[in-house]
Length: 426
Image 1 (tube, one colour):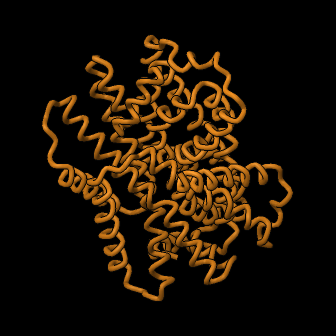
Image 2 (tube, helix red, strand yellow):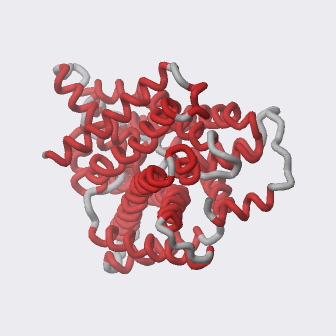
Image 3 (cartoon, one colour):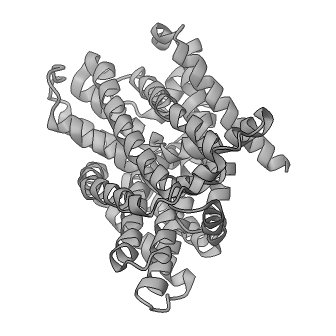
């Protein structure tokens, strides 16, 4: 368990678990924090990838979105809750599977989250560079300088602590929801059919399955907030005790309903506005859909608002994912036998994150390519498969066995991982 969690424990050790009463402000803060972690680069690139697949694959993905995200994140939350009091995900893994298996899964947990920080680093740098060039008509500084300043600024925010990050993200969600809704509604008069041009072309079953196969990892990534689930579960168990699982499920359900409705309305509004050729152009330019829309429309409000919304979305998701990535890296360092002091450990982790994120953001690899081959499939292993394996093997999770949702979650996880194998083999 990390030192940050220890400090939180000390503040709450005298407090008894709260009763499971009516919905409260604490629950709303977490609901919005989960929403804020999920809505970021993946969401802003989802209209591009989903739209390129055609109308019918998008309809199927829409129907799968809520059960796929809710059941998976509920399973991971239950896994963390099954551990001892105050144990984060790295501790629970070691408790259930032993030291060696715990170290291996902790490594997987880190590599499930850390690539997302790299994706956000690239997306943030591209968004700011595009905004400077196209909206402010300023030549952006060298990419290496711009990416370094942006990432350093985000890491400075991280120093404020976990609780401050969650509260800040929940506050940022309010204007973001309004802005995303505004953009989706603004695009309605510009709907020209877009993806509907492919509705009359029912794909062959093999082609449809192939499209869905490769699109599911992107959908998994787009609604993912697994990096903050560990901190969420620990806080719920401390606050609600034996009622933590019930209240956690309620918070997750509301958070997922909010994100699925908002995101899919935005996705459909985008794909009904832009043609498949324009979506392909956005993918080739390695831009988020907001940056592409800003360059596409002559409306000055949209031109300025869209990149700023993208900047806020990616920044807050970076902060949320940093919690999980740093948790995993600290767990790896501790399990390696090295036990530096709390401040030294924080500095080591921050320096590592800064250097690697800066290098990747400077190199500017394909964001959608990273999502398809790294982000979605690796997240699927830790988010979908590990909790389902624990339900089968861990006595503390035996009461969750025999549920149909377990089969569904396992199937989605296997589909995402097989897509990685296919991509690497190409």
